[in-house]
Length: 267
Image 1 (cartoon, rainbow, N blue to C red):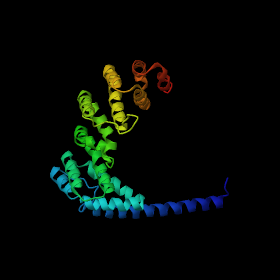
Image 2 (tube, helix red, strand yellow):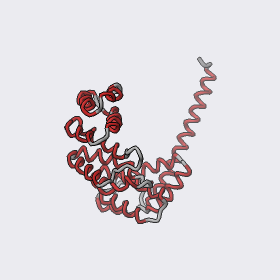
Image 3 (cartoon, rainbow, N blue to C red):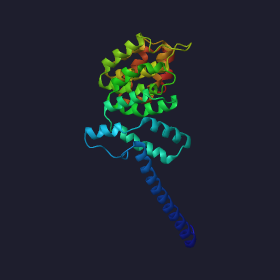
Image 4 (cartoon, one colour):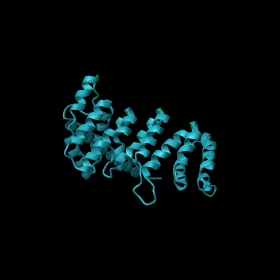
C-alpha cells in the first residue's frame, strides 16, 4: 500500500499526463482536419455527400496525383496522425459509387506515377470496389496475377470469395476458363502457382458444405501434394458442424498416408 501523500502525488502526476494526452489529441484532431481538407481539395473527407450529384462532385474533387505524393510522404514519416487521416480518407472512398471507383482506377492508370505510388492508390480503391462488384474486379484485373509489380493481385482472392458466395457455379466456371487460358500457369519448377492455390481454396471452401461432389471435382484436377496443401489451408475455417463433410472430402481425395497430417490438426 502506498502512503497517502505518495498516492496523491502518483494520482496527480497521472492526471497531469492524461490532460497533456488529451491536449495532444485535440491538437492532432485539428491537424487532421486541416490535412483532410487539403487532401480532398475541397470539403473535409469525413463529410458525406447528400445525394448522387454531391457524391459525384466529391469524388471528382480527388486529385490522385496529389494524394499519391502525400501517401509517399506519410509512408516515409510513419506518423500515426497521418494514418488516422488515411482512415478518414477510406470513409470517403466507401461512399463512392461503383462507377466512381472504376473511373478513379482508370484515372490513376493514366497518371505518370512510380510503381509504388500507383500500387498504393489502386489498393485504396480496390477494396471498396470488391464490396460493390467482386465479379467486375475479377474479370477486369485477372491479368494482374501475372504482374509482379501489381498490388491488386493480393486482393483478388477476396473478390473470388465474395463472388462465389453470390453465385458459386458461375464463379467456378469462370475460374476453369482462366485456368484453361493459362492465367494460373506456374512459373516455378515445382509446378505450383500460389494464386491458383488460394483460389482453389476459396472454391473448395464454398463447395464442400453445399456440394461435396463439386469440391471433389476441383481437388481431382490438382496433383496429390497440392490437394494436401489446399485442404490444410482450410483447417482454420472449418466449423464444427462441417467437420464430418470435410473429413469425408479428405478421405476421398487425399492419399491414405497423407490424411493424418490434415485430420490430426482438425479441431
